[in-house]
Image 1 (cartoon, one colour):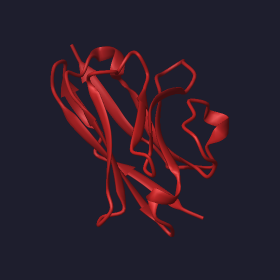
Image 2 (cartoon, helix red, strand yellow):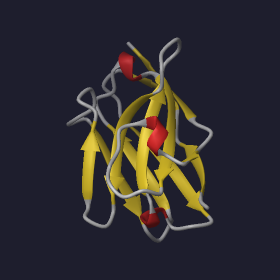
Image 3 (tube, helix red, strand yellow):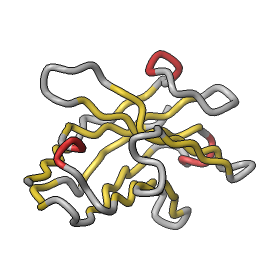
Image 4 (cartoon, one colour):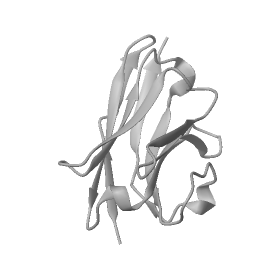
Length: 124
């Protein structure tokens, strides 16, 4: 199985950029569909982005399309979420997750492994 550890969160201002990292260990991230989710205070966890490495496909939530980019570094066994033009509504705890099944999914229930999360706070 794979273990996941997020890092890179912090406090930024609206319009700034931030890059989150999800370091995988135990297995290569390329063996999984990798996704990013977020949970804002008082709200349910929601899908942000996902990537399938075999066919190089990605999918984004409408709210982040064009601003966020998911990518991976094979040498570092790490998945990234580049977040540009951040908005206060992007404030949340961000989680990376790994799905053993084939095919991109936006559903939390499809993902088998989760990191501990990293806090992102965007001030206006």
